[in-house]
Image 1: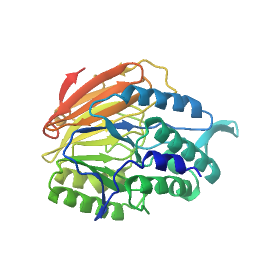
Image 2 (image 1 turned 60 degrees about the vertical axis):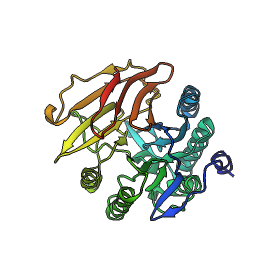
Image 3 (image 1 turned 90 degrees about the vertical axis):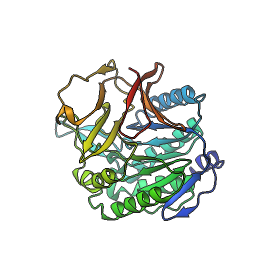
Image 4 (image 1 turned 120 degrees about the vertical axis):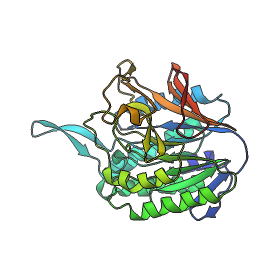
Length: 338
């Protein structure tokens, strides 16, 4: 069976307990790190290309201090279709159930075996291309359930690791009432639980655009969770989808929200180019911190949750650290390397 390998690999983790939907992976008062990948887009035509990139990242991050404890994926683990010529025009043809299932199975097995770590996922639009998004539920949810020790029936969930809570959300589902209620419950528990002082949220689309872009966001998702994030200080909101790299802090009614956008971009051969001088579509004085890159490939984030601060590194496979920032207080980022 497909699940045997990832489950064995993840078996060294503590058995999680259920406390109002917050799965506990570790309660130790120790620093840790985790990796964030986005938009891997595994497909039958690029299995080996993406796999080689993932193995490169796994090798480069193996000796990190503190050691990584999990891999967070902010969606589009799989491609979910192919571009074909239909009636003389190029068109994206969505995957069937069996095609989607094959891509997701290979992707999960490959990432889990490369890192030998739990792989936690916020689904992207490309992960749910088959009719009814049945393949994601059949393939990914059972694997996630075994990884965190909590039976999942929905695409959203949360875990505690030491001093941090990590929340993974669904997107493009249309109705976010139940997910928003879940988010409110987890945020309330995090506020009330001793020893929790860091909060990270993962979803596929950005909450907002930084610049003019043809890529869509999910306005219903933004409107459903932005009020909760404003009233519950969050260290970072990790996302992808637009295939551009950026870290930006925005102020909303006195609350600072840090959005970290990433993409693996294995098929891109362009040089990594800073686009900090691009015109923002919101007032520049609304953000005390902003940087962005376009192009490049094989990029990922390393997040280190230390005793007194959080460190965020943008890395490129084979090139090391591209940029690094850190913060003690949420929303107050400072550059370490640029």
